[in-house]
Image (cartoon, rainbow, N blue to C red; front, side, top):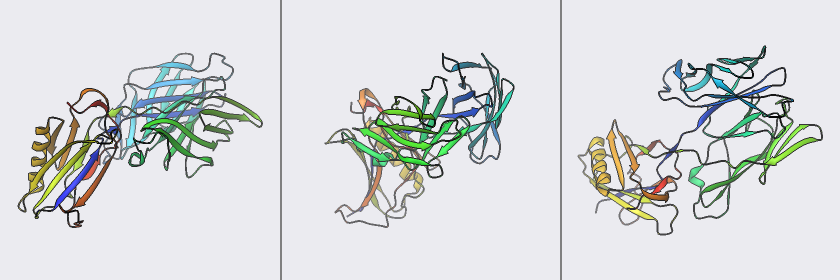
Length: 358
């Protein structure tokens, strides 16, 4: 009886989100910008400069009752990376004032200020409700493996969280958070965010999102409040890359890949099975899985360089998957620790738009 390795997959996708930058000038003006991470960022290169085509820059001006002002970014903006980490940028933006970004320093209205960058995992941009038009951003990593699509109410603590405002980045774990960051979910959808942090010198004393209300202390006993924005699901990238290098070879067994719909009780969509021979190489296994997945008609798979890439074939509309885990067992349910499955090469697993049943 051949043992079976069953990688159970619920929801195949990653998330792509913008990076942000902020600055605070001596005249009280605050700057904010964001852009999408450009293609081609290479974590092996010590220094890399890449073109940025969607940079936006915004300034909040004290005493300006109309709030913040968007500037026009001139062509030629770039972002600089060191071993895949965002370290600076170059750009010029014009409008009510001219802003010149030069790596870690930005100049406007005759003042220069340091820039705080946040490459972001998941990001929420929001405005401070004090009338100045000051913008800030929040980034965090969502623990998708804890999201339960069947629960109507769920609160999940965040272990990574950054608030980037007015040239300061307040990182959870190293800054004074009086309420730990927590994401609220309803049936797998983000329904709110709770946190509170002391930001003295930001130039605000504290910022909090609690029970749907954003409260900012602008000075001792002085605060402003407004409805807090609800974080949105980041735009999906609908694929999953599995690294097959760790998979067991030199042993005969069966691989079952169970594709599940995270929004349904009876949620099995498809089971893809292949038989692995003791003589099969990793490439043999990859090619067998690719053929079986493509034959299902529900997903398209490509294999190369030890990486198996899987994408859904969409029909109709709706939301379809949840998260990813692996199980290793034999056909009679007894665990076999000698079997090893693929590892996730690149994916944060959540939801994807579309109905993957034909």
